[in-house]
Image 1 (tube, one colour):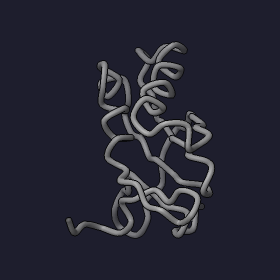
Image 2 (cartoon, rainbow, N blue to C red):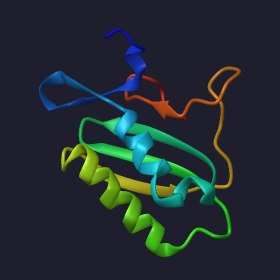
Image 3 (tube, rainbow, N blue to C red):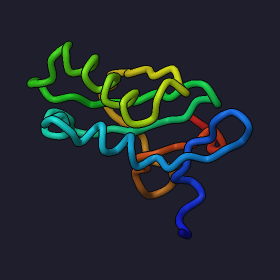
Length: 106
């Protein structure tokens, strides 16, 4: 399988794991309809941060459910942080839904 190198999480021992299970967690259980915009950032080999521009229908419990859905899909490899923001910047001319630790996080 050949794909974008940037669409993989790096875990300890430099192993790579596809990022699509995180997308599945975000899209599951109606959460996608509660989000204007999102971005997944791998901060380091131990931490994932999910930036969310939320809609008014987002509930506090949705954050816990999202973290649990992520853990179900990728295990306990990462500390998962959710950060609510008012906007998510672009890299160049396009929005990136995933930014790896190799890309400068601004």
